[in-house]
Length: 400
Image (cartoon, rainbow, N blue to C red; front, side, top):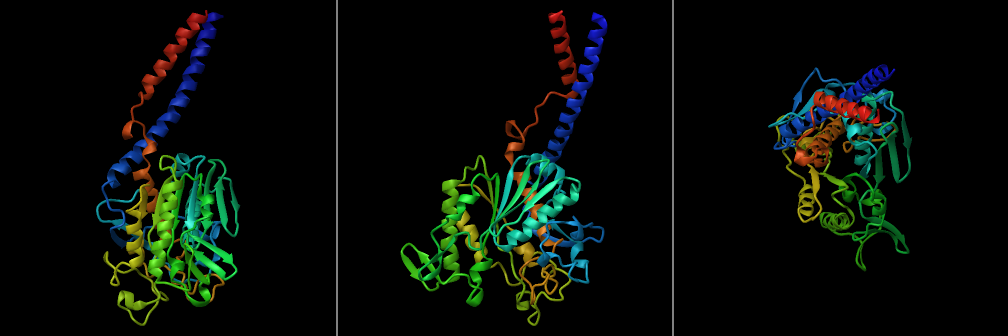
C-alpha cells in the first residue's frame, strides 16, 4: 500500500510539475521574444523611415466586425471605394517593427489601466487599439462604457482596461460670469488621470480653432484675462501647466507616460506641392521620408516642454510619418459628418501604426518585464522538475 501510494504521488507530482513548468516555459519563450525585439529596436529611431507598399498586408481587423469603431472613422462602411491606402506599411530605416501581439500585450498588462488623454485624435487611437485587440481575441469577453468625458473598453478575462479621457486642451475650460474661460494654468481634470499604469497624452488640434468652432470666450493666466493671444504662445503655456502637473502627480515607478506628437491635417495641398488639392481623392502616401512643408512649430514646442521635465516622458514622434499619409483621412467618407475630414484618420488605417509604435515603445521602455536588469536567470525546466520531485520524495520519506 505504501509503495503504491508513493508511486501514485510521484506520478501525480510529476505531471503537475510538468504542467506548471510548461506554462512557465511558455512565459519564458514569450519573454525571450520580447527581449530579442527590445535588443533589435532598442537603438533604432522608430519614427525615421518610409512607407512601403506591400500587397500581402492583411488588415489588423475587419471594421465591420469591430464593436468599438466610431462612424466618423469607418471609411469602408461609408463608401470609400479604394483600398490601396490599406496596403502601406511603415518601415523604420534601421530596424523592423515587432508584430503587434495582442495576447502578449494583454498578458503583460493584466490587471492594468491604460488611458488615452486628449481630443478626438485620442478617440481615433483608442478605437484602433481596442479593435486590434478584439480581432486577435474575438472570443474574449469585453465590456464597454461610453461617457461624455470618460469611456472604457475592458477585456474582462485579463482585467485590462483601455480608457479614454476626452479633453480638448488638457488644461481646464471653466464657465464664469464673463463666459467660458480657458484656464492656461489650471488642470482640475487631472484627478481622473491618477492611478493609471500607462498614460498617453495628445493635444494641439483644438488650439488652432477660431470663430464658431472655438469653445471658449477668454483665456486666463493667473488673474489676467485675454480675449485672445498667439496660439503657439498659449499652447506653450498650457503644455507647461500639463508638464508641471505630471511632475507633481505621476510616480514614474508606477506609471509610464507618453506624449503623442502633433497629428497633421491635409487641407492645404500646397503643403505637399499640390496647391489646388486637399486630402480628397488622395490614394497614396508621399514617397521618401521628408515632408515639403516641414515640421509644424507646435511639434517643436512639445519637444521643448518635454525636455524640461523631471518625469520621464516618451515622445511618440508620429508627426512626419503621418504627414506623409495624405491618403489616409476619411475625407468625404466620414459617417454622417458633412464636409471633408482631413484631420482624422480612417480605421483600419494610420492609427493602427501609431499603436504598433506604442507597442514597440512599451517593449523598449518597460524595464519591469525582466528581473536583474533584463537578464533571464531562471532554472531550466528539466532541472526544475527533478528538483521538485526530489524535494517531495524527501518530504514523503520524512512523513513516513
